[in-house]
Length: 93
Length: 93
Image (cartoon, rainbow over all chains, first blue to last red):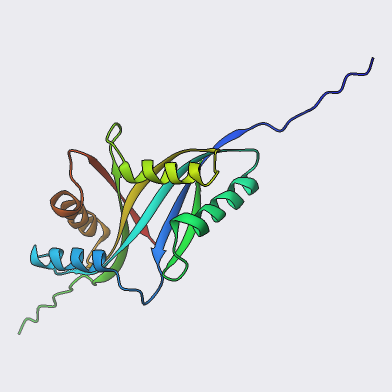
């Protein structure tokens, strides 16, 4: 009798921070109004405020490459608008 | 005649990323609806999505300590709600 031993790759749990930033030249009303509020509160030395959205994604995967591919796809399909946003992925731990 | 030479400290330009996160146990409707949308799109291996706001602040200052103190004050007065948020400051460059 022959026994086949299937050695499946382990599923690992990974966490990525996906930073969604506005491209250069795109208006950032949230950053601008924050800057205006800071000026009104007397913080004259603050020169610029920009807003960035971060999504922390926890994912089960077989490898970092596979997870990176999936998260890139998620950014392009759902999280970022390629006309106005650029994104970068930061792995945690 | 005595000449006094006042040696003023140089003003330097610094950039900080201020991360405003929800405290443990606080509902995150944006993260939850993003997770729901990802499940509907077929990304079953994504286990959790949390949203974080980041403000990139560009500030003129005489020292890092002074800028850190000012940015902490800004967080407490304007950017973060201490009941539901915690914040951390990341210096860039």
